Length: 449
Image 1: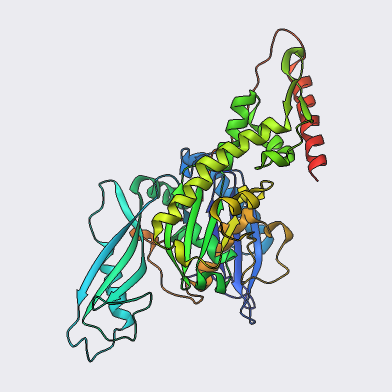
Image 2 (image 1 turned 90 degrees about the vertical axis):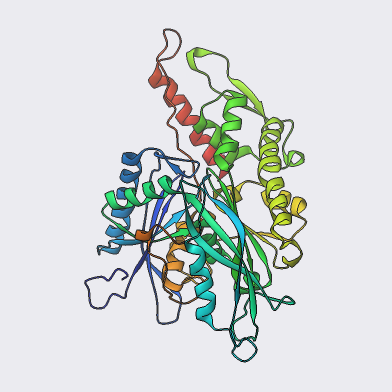
């Protein structure tokens, strides 16, 4: 049962909850009479208890959910309890599984939808590695009577139906932590959904999903990839690197705080070394009155390019080749998530994958006047979770597996560290140095805008 507001004129509402590395976001919405999705409220909280898509600190994560929930609820002016929650992280795995059934009177009776559902249900209970559990079973393709291949066998004749399914599993303890955090925040997880699939619902057009498209969601802690074909997700993979990995590289190599490394990445960084200004050096203030550090834009670009190329885009290219769908991707690539805002990542992705690439904003199926803050790749997952709750995978409301049974359908994330400085015996005091850094960061933001 979805949330219902107490006011008679308020439509039935659905709530998406994204527990990410860099933020926790809540969005409330419903379908309007025109079939579009209206946004009634939204909120954001800090995510200081999550790293690489894994919840490390229950209390901090619950606090972030509470803040996000309260802001969204105050904007909507109504209470809610049930949410559609995303799952992602380094613990997510997928494998292909073949399941064959022999039908009686297959030459006379057409294949029915409930027979395919039975095949999916059969796989929900197969044995997996101890400590893991099945999150989702996604049909990929079917072979009928050993010779005809199709993605939709319903309505065809056939005695032997050979189905190939993508089985997505996750660490049981990690999934339980998600459910506990939601419950401790006085909410109920109606369904757990694979986050790249949710992002695809918000960013991919019907034509892209039909003709074959790759959805790449670069989050803080991980990069989630989903391939859609013939209108549905057929392959997913989680790559254990994201935007925070790049920031950590900058922080470690340049020996500067994470917060400052993030600002440098946003203000001066690029994925293409040739697009950087090799003559420009950035002066960074230092503690204890030491001489400022100088970092060249060229060096910054080399750091960013190395991580993006080797650990993210090259891994995506390999995954596409191994998926079996490389030759069917005619709808191109859609980049989303916070990492898609990196300068020239679109061009580098297009060069690496040799496919057309666009940046995906979460606007497919939503009203045009949604809040401007939400019209960003950063909110693709939470808006996709909302859309899944309203329409399901096929553009219509459908039954989902209950989260109470720890099963259903994957972002990301990484812990937002607060850099602490110790007071020194020499040079400027902590407060003076903090003001210098704050002014420096403000100047960077002004230049970026």
